[in-house]
Image (cartoon, rainbow, N blue to C red):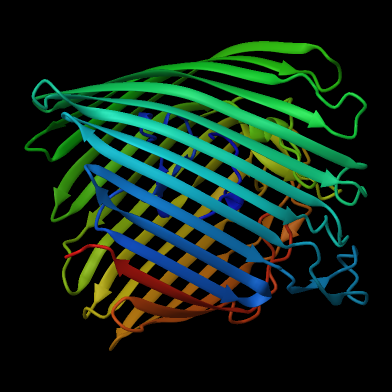
Length: 551
């Protein structure tokens, strides 16, 4: 699922944590992200025999029900999760009636056709086989949502449905008395999207498209530890297929597009000076063969390319938990199928995209403190500079349709900071701040020197949690500065600040209840695409944890 993935379409049920890798990208993720990698970590199978139930209701007809059961039985670790979400999304927003600079005709109106239903079933199982361990996983997602229209036009009938299946098998274990190890991974994913606009409300004319994207892959990794050196070799192959169906055409089935790829690489980590210094390096080669259908004819377009990526990093343990980290890497990434062929009316793919390549440099200080009753637990300050050729970026045009384009040359440089800690046992705080300059360096006069689309110069997030008796109170602040949707910087999105507060309280030994108020100041802001977001909203949730152990 690499490349352009819309995280907003993924249900959060079963997601235990989200790991963000800035800079150096571990080879096990099998991709080369120019800015890093986002890893959605699912809940593991096994653990104590527990059942978890969650119910949430809130503003705009929002409902969420989730149930999971996990534990161990007959040497098998297992997890079963079922999740359902619904929202009418009928919030009020200020409609400018298509006249941005004329305030006279602005009016408050209700968002229409913005409802959604989504469900998820996730099954995971694992067990030991001799010294090895096998893990099985299958996730099934389905969603049915309305598309509310572009700009001030309120679509009433347009729908977008998604069905997604992801299956994965992992087998890993030690070799040579623990001095070496292996990992084998096989996966298959299938996603079917159906875009239905029979009244021509969102897209160009009437459309009823059903697109299916499948992906199958295998990856084998082996590593060996020799004194202070950990060496890893990996390789694998994958195949993707995009099959479109234009259901309103006399001949609805169009030729499929296919991508076949092989990948091989090596990584090494070398520690020295009593493990106070760590040097890591990696190189990766990816060979791709694309066989795409021409959208203008029935011809097939064949193209092959080889992308090389390499990285070198250094970590120095300075003193008392402080570390100096630096990294340099050259990366390349082909456009994903969502960026090439995606079509949901207001977001359209671009088959003319080429691979983006770039040089990444970053350096920073990292502090990890001991877990104590009071004090700093994490401090990080990082500066970065990324030089990118043919950067793939979604750009919104004058019709408010977003489409990915290659931006000839760009530079992204800035500073990222974050901190986390505890004061007097009861007060927990965390925060992050990013300041960047994302500059378009293309030779065209109307865009050179301008900000890149969808790149706010400043981002701030902070959260404070206070434990008072059995209550847990929290306050959260999120801020993004003004940014632009287009390359010429003519379509601005105003700065947005969102305040959130809430409280959680136990009700008995196994039940807890939470109340949360979001967007306290009722700030009518917009998302990264320029569409309105809800104002003030309240939500109530109930969590029940039941032990299934006979003990």
